[in-house]
Image 1 (tube, rainbow, N blue to C red):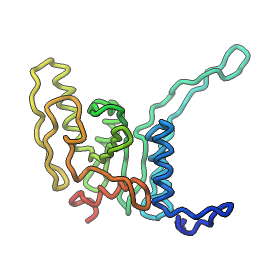
Image 2: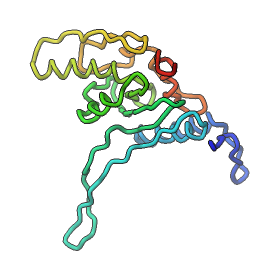
Image 3: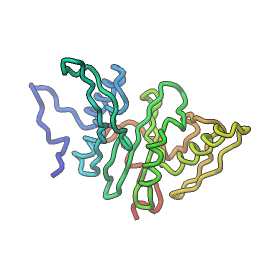
Length: 220
């Protein structure tokens, strides 16, 4: 059974935090310490699990330990790259999430690696959602459905290979939404649809999976 975040008892006489307070405190801690965005998403997903609305887990990356002549582990290297960062379901809908962060005002479309793009292409169907969850300086967040990101990424990868003059990528229509990517290889927050922006708050701290409810035809 799902654990109700509000049912946890207070500890050491402290006032019990409400879900939003608890998640926001975690967010501020991560931001202040410069912790990775992925860590915050793991915390958010844990609160989704407790709420019973979603189950989304981190996909582990396989590492190969490197030992010295004495057999001691000195370092490691990636043996198999993970497909995407997170896999799970939201209200019965399969979801694959790749988390990307930028500490500048723009995010490159090719931040999604070729093996990740290939997986999202295979994963995304009418009833299975792939998305790129973007953080701009841990201040603004966007959940971009994969079909839109794919068109922008493909358009600029093609132009890079052929060294053609920059042209505006084609307009994309999917899930009842229409978007024209910016005429460059990266995007600023203002370039994304307002429907994709995710605001801090709620029971999970970052209700990014609720973006799926705005996609026509997915939950029907």
